[in-house]
Length: 238
Image 1: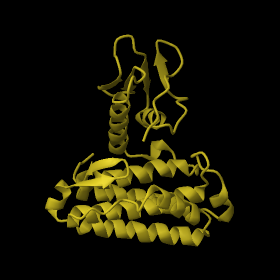
Image 2: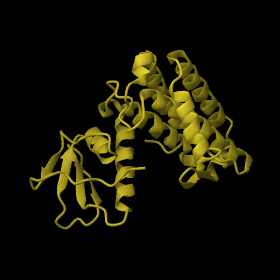
Image 3: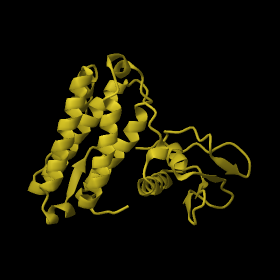
């Protein structure tokens, strides 16, 4: 997958279209139904995705202007905005998702080339501005799964899946005392090692299923462990 944020916008646009098609199928009862995230309804997930787009616009504005614009006013404000938006009617959710997606695209288009070299203060700390488009794509694709609406990791593009898999493996490997494992994609030439390779179980399967399992969005039912035994428990993902 390209690291060029402008070229990556094509992936963001396609993922956004898929998300909007799913959201358009929800009625009021669907929105009040549970998502895959504990304590959140589907309405919470959609409200979060809209506010996340606003947050990324803030970070792009910070990179473009050089001013310290926070992603969210505060964590409390972020939570309150999601809670207050979760119960809105379906049409309001759709309008909000479309509007904020357009604002994100406009903010990306307004970025001068040199601004992509900036570092901004994201919710979890400093982040390269050049990764903001990837961050938005990741939010859309992962939270689309969380809507529990027949969207599967198998719908992810191969390039997105492999990048997410590598990123998650690196994240887990940098955690204190991660569970050791070797990840092997079916039919792929490369392996990803988390922790100590010596004596580590090999977990193999389709790339989308490996990635979803590694980020806590899949039970790993299609994955195989060698030698035979239980799947390791991945650390909590971001």
